[in-house]
Amino acid sequence: MSFKKRFLAGSLAAVMTLGMVTGCSTVKKSDLSDDYSEVTAATYGGEKIYLDEVNFYLRNSQMMYEYYGSMYGMNIWDNDTMEDSLREEVMSAIYQTKVLCDYAEEKKIELTEEEKKLVKETVEKLLTDESNKTFLEIAGSDKELLTELMTQNALANKAYHAIVSEAKITTTEEKVQKNGVTYLLFKEKPEETETKADDSKAETEEETKEETKYYTEKDANAALEKIQSGKSITDVAKSLDMETAKENFGVKDEQTTEFGKAAVKLKKGESAVAYQENTGWYVMVCDTENDEDATKNAYDTAVKSEKDAYFKTAYAGLEKPSFKVNEEVIESLNIKDTPVLGTEKESEESTEAKSGETEASKENKGSKETEESK
Image 1: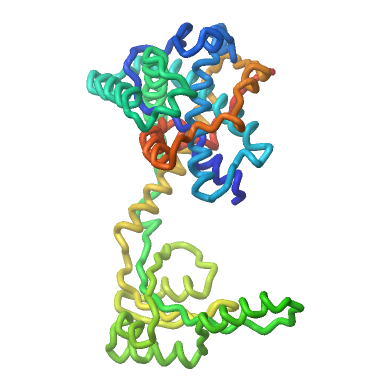
Image 2 (image 1 turned 30 degrees about the vertical axis):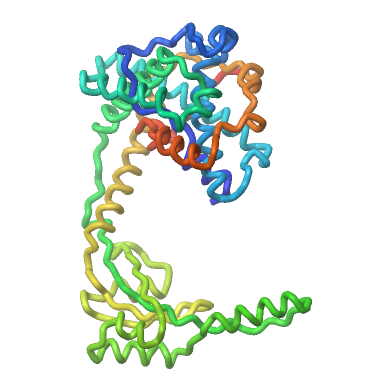
């Protein structure tokens, strides 16, 4: 997966989860900026979407982009296509939220009193937490606007769950059962290749060779014999100054590696060795034929995939008003030269505080099929 795709999959439509005001109307005025609150950025049917609303969504997603970019030690805006991708995905998320709010109104889906209370607390924390200072200066800090946007997302979230509750889930834990193995990797020495390297590179390669220890099939078999004679794989690892590692394999899955093929054949307590070309020998012991945590994670992932597919189909069938985006207005929001991350400490705390998303956005980034007429 490309770097750009990882960002799109991991950080877009990062909007606040809950809001307090009942209903899904668009806020038409705010104290954020006289210009932003009066400039039409898009229209949803006959309803105007103002730039202050778009700005908040965009800056929140921008914050996530920049946070993950900092984790990779890079400025993601150096990629000229990232700004356009961010704007496009944010507008798509806004459109989907509006459509789901209409669905919530049609189905009489409303926030409970407990949800409204949580919304109020969330907004207050967002506005009063000092770690959000830089973000709010750029994204806007109007309480009325923020509560309205979070309300829309809360209702969209409930609408999403109402839709996917009708999905017929075929996944079972038995189908996605994962085993658990502990293993040692006996690395095979790679074939020598002729290189015309300079002295410094040659020295680096020599240092690497000294640090990396390689083994033979005989070494791996000797370790397996010790395990099968009663020694634990942990003790064998210690005697060889090696470290064990753990892995899970789907027992019903078609395995594509020799390691996996050997691992799924083992019963609890059994051991084996498998050779993987260009890698080495895996000496393994089966800890369990059903790792409950790994199996549950696999089950949750598979169920989510089924729900995503169902939602995509159901969403495509919903009646949707036209959605027209004023590209010139959207592009007026400077991204590259307006970073929303503050200090390193503020960046981490702010990211944690604002990383909540609606399930409709978080679980279905791939299913936002925006029907824009430009």
